[in-house]
Image (cartoon, rainbow, N blue to C red; front, side, top):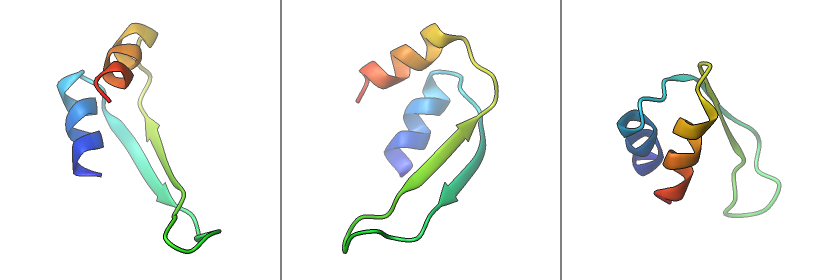
Amino acid sequence: MADITRILSDAGINIDAILQKPAHKVGQVPVIILTLPVVEGQMNLAIEKN
């Protein structure tokens, strides 16, 4: 999670909310990250850093 938030921050993307849903499988937990409005190019750059 720390790596994801750092990458978003480095790209100038602000997080609005982080939601964690109940686990569907052992060892896996769905997480939803909502951001404030962002230019698509900024998000694409952040995704490429993965």
